[in-house]
Image 1 (tube, helix red, strand yellow):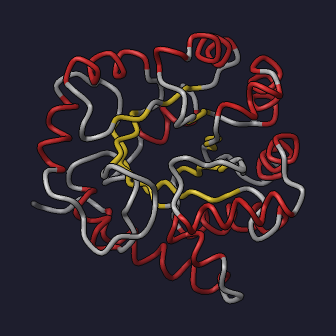
Image 2 (cartoon, rainbow, N blue to C red):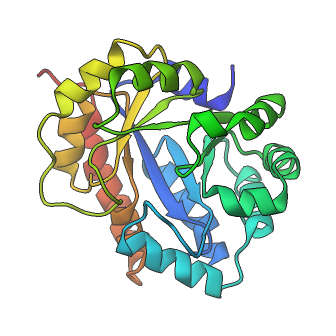
Length: 261
């Protein structure tokens, strides 16, 4: 059983999945933040590979990616970050990035080096399963779970197809559009999750637009994991993040524990 399977098997309530952009505020602080997030209660970490044209990322993550690129972060340095984290942590680590840099790097080398460093999975938001055969096969050969996204507008037949291909978990996008903090959750999430559950056997995790502990608690009643990125990045932009981030995570986790509907 790999790290992702193990953490879902042992869960009590919905898991908290935290997203960080590798290299923001710096590579060293990324590693420090992952270890602090784990200590504070995060269950899985998504490590964003910075890219110059991040199609699904809102302004907060775009700015973090720009800063990371200015810091000289590339795929090799992202893999280095995984190695550094693995020296002190066994938390599941998932790379989230766009396909163009991976294609330029070479899918075989990327998967081999990522797994060797200690990564557990991949999320490639601009690579639909119909076009992912090469990367999917390569990831499988190297023990990496390739995780696909499903949006509320996805028709049932496509949900069935994506669910048959995704490994580790299914990433449910709560809203159409890009990532970012929103004041309210969109209507229809329960119906969306129920549609997916008709076809999925793997855990379901939801992200995009979830920021407050209260919003996370609402989503936690529907799925197995809650993904938060932009609000994590916002905390890291504050010089006091080593204090504010654990406080935020502790409050968040209190809303993710098993609650009666």
